Amino acid sequence: MAAACTVLIGCVTTTVSVTPSPQTSVCDSGASALVLWAPQWRPDQKDVLEREAAAEAGLKGFLQSSGCFARSQLRRLSGITPSVVATEIASANGRFNKVIAITLRELGPVITLLSSPALIEGGTEVVLQVAEHIPPSEVQTQSFTFHWQSGGPGVIKGVASLSQDMQASLVKGLQPNKLHTEPLH
Image (cartoon, rainbow, N blue to C red):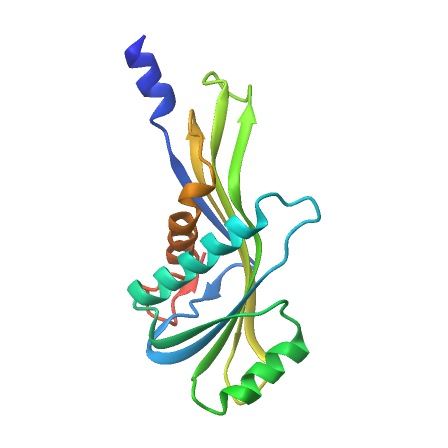
């Protein structure tokens, strides 16, 4: 019985999809970046404050530890629109080589019942829209969505691990350890 539980519960997998694919990495370890972020939740989203706090902590942790940029500043916005991005680029006044706009669409635990012999499959899901701008232009140089999922049979998560999950998703989705010219798949 214990061996069967180990087999059914120990299967955590992580998948990342990038749309459209491939994309070049926005990370450039020699660049300075203004990273703008805003949530765009579905109307029935639960635990909004906890998810936003986790997202911000994950973004900060990623920017501090990943080597994605030589220097970065994180700024939370109420929403990301072309006019808001244009205003932020103008207010940056040439202090940054890149402006990265991240719209958070999903950050949370996922649970599916009766979908496998384990009866419960779960994990975490992160969906981000990423747009890159090279100042002083307001034109996007690239824009893509990445969908990160980590979990499996018997995995049950709550909101407590979301900041680590957000950081892990950014490592996979933005690939800071790759050269900035390598395509994301």
